[in-house]
Image (cartoon, rainbow, N blue to C red; front, side, top):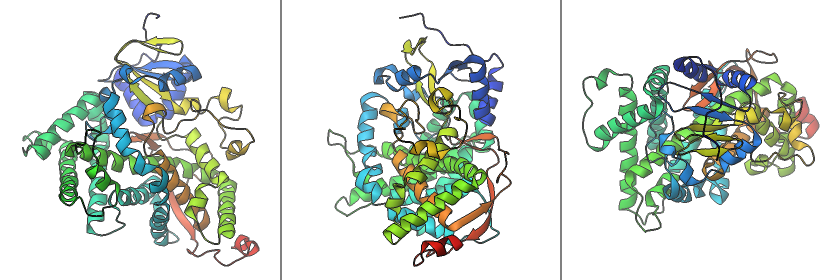
Length: 491
């Protein structure tokens, strides 16, 4: 094996690199790629070196890394979902965890949620009035938080539903604000996460109170909200386990009653970690993705119009809005794929190397964070053609077109691909189909070349400052129910 070494990268101060990553990651990746090519190293405060790769062979080797070559507990992520969450565990423990967590988010369990997803989306749209103003990522975040809360509890409303919804939202906001980002960057993201988790354990599990200093620090609210959220989950776990013969529904109950291959119930804290991870990932990914998606559609009104026409054709064919049929609509899927290709909410997927490792033509040293860059790879003209930077859904409809797993990977890939990818795609397909059918929007970003910057929220890249929109038209729920296509177009 060649001598391990890091590829070149910017030499500016670590803190400056971290700020550029946090406050404009698309722009910074493009700047570094233009200067250094398909592999470059960033050095950020409190972190091991971060090597970004976008060459196909490098990406392939990245996704084929073996479990004993990586240590995900060392990932530089500052949010304390829990040390036992699937994203931070390794080896057989990781594989066993996925066996428990994957089934509720694929197959029949997922398809059975489609109607309820549509019902929740409809409930939100029915409240909209012409002139109402929204921030699109937060609007989508609210809708998808309702969906993931339903997924966990098998409840669509009520006191318990509202407690989970609001407490989770408060915890996310307290854990991902600018102050927490700055502190995490200066302290070191993984060290900061470990510190937060230790203090959570002291308060929530061992019953200790925070020190006088902790009580005035910016992280105090985040810790206290997690203690409260975990206590609510822990109480539900104990009630479920005390009555195991009850006909429970929902992912939380499924996790609470799951057992390892040995027959032992999964530890309470493990269940809590996974529930919080699901709640976090279950809506923030969609909020960020949806924000960028709506930007593209507002800039391309002819595409939004065609989406609406495709939905109306589906309704004409089925006789009603069938959410599962909508999820199979080729043009709608092409539009979502194209938005995720150009503006993925997760710009890269990361592994922490434990020893010298060959990645393509590189040999990287241990204790390196290596990232396969979805953002750069999915814009590569060598893969996507000279129009790679254009939003053109039609490319996905061309005969024989099928990008490989090392060319398009907005949800990661390999053994550690995102568990909730299918749920995220299903809810966004239904949501944007109903937006296209029923709602018209206007924005400062409509039909122009103006773009917001980028900001990090819960590990996702969102439009900086949000995507402000104004409702200009809301069609009724039963729109097109008993009309022919000529009448539909006139509407």
